[in-house]
Image (tube, rainbow, N blue to C red; front, side, top):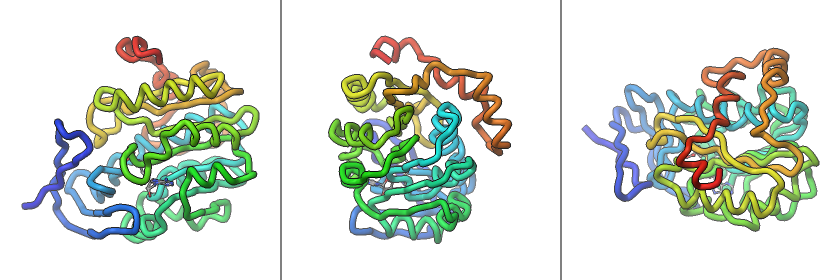
Length: 280
Ligand code: SAM
């Protein structure tokens, strides 16, 4: 019997039994592994770190996409940075957006996910509203003249090619690409184990934007309890949740979700005391 051991936290380990190996290889940017686990279904690993699994992808992708889009209320153009598996893209496209641009560094990862994880992207790459750009997300936001109502940074952790997606210059360029009420969302790690990442982002959001903080959801395979989703905006205060408006928009879109609903949306903005103490 063989096991995958995650290497994200040197002092704590998550192990997943490999019941059926599907793919193992290296792209120009990172190592990639896909295997089946009896409970989790297909699992995607990049550079030794769990990215997503068929069983729990919905917790993460629904919270990344629906919270900012329903809070905004009229998102026409959405930008996803990273997100190679297409799970976030699929959730974004459940909304009546005009366009969803996805910029991932690694075209090979996107192709491998289409081939081996079709249950996660569910045809999202074939949607006519999708514009897939293969390239560095940091370079894209530095150069594009397009503007977006929602920017979602669905990145790997700040190691390897994802490191640039946590830097101040990158966030400043994202701000430049936002419309007046536009909002940026980040995958910000599990704060109990990745406190530095949390504090760095908080400091950067506060330096660059009028509003910025975090909301939370526990994603089973991102061990350590709640995952922090960062958010920052000049024109929209996401933590000021208008529950009636969110519920109305949720019903109007007829969203089919497995985790997200308007009550979860409100609850996700409650700040635990140990994070309030850090300034959240
Ligand atoms: N949900 C995942 C997590 O938290 O572990 C992240 C999922 S997604 C597969 C991460 C994607 O970010 C990968 O496809 C990777 O190629 C992409 N990525 C890493 N660095 C990038 C960069 N600088 N620009 C654009 N995409 C990048």
